[in-house]
Length: 291
Image (cartoon, rainbow, N blue to C red):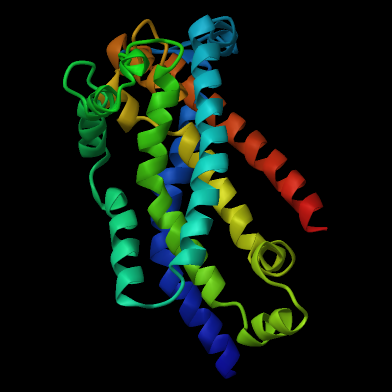
């Protein structure tokens, strides 16, 4: 057998266990959830087929639309916040010095922490009486800016975007550092000879060379923002008055608190469809940019 075929066969055999696990624990549950989305089912007992009744009810529920709006805010904040900051840090910390390694570890540390711990930390930071944010504002004479950050409906979802972005910048920074290190030194030298420095070099040389990586990070931002759950459940539980409700918390509440498993399955299917649509739109826009 040729060496190339043996190599491909070994790779396929090595990937087979992971592929089987992915199919069993990801692909099959997706179709299983879509199947139960057309039934009225409480998790136990008999189920009743209702067609698209669950989907019709979801689309008529104002809480669902509020949750979708909040998720879109998270998506926008992730794309405009996490990616640019991560890229900037990657450019600054590209050199493999002790200082750079220390800062990389510090930026990546929130990703190592449990999301529950992150939510608890930021819950205390935003606390209206003894929270760090209000304490600092009072110390610098901005008492009028102090707020109950997680209780006021017009700002609480924006406040939640900060800890979510803070905890997710690290992985994207590492991804960008790896992409920047793969750029050939000859290209960098040619750009310097041609007079491309600073912002011009970033726009016309660096970004085109790592554009595929930027697209991947955008996809990860979209999918991650649409499945955001832990931070909100720890910090606000979706309240007050569903002002911080997300699609994932909306699904959780309807599935496990009122035992509407069929309805929750329909919500999860809609989340998957919305995620696919946003990723498709992102692909079309970024592909035109690349062209």
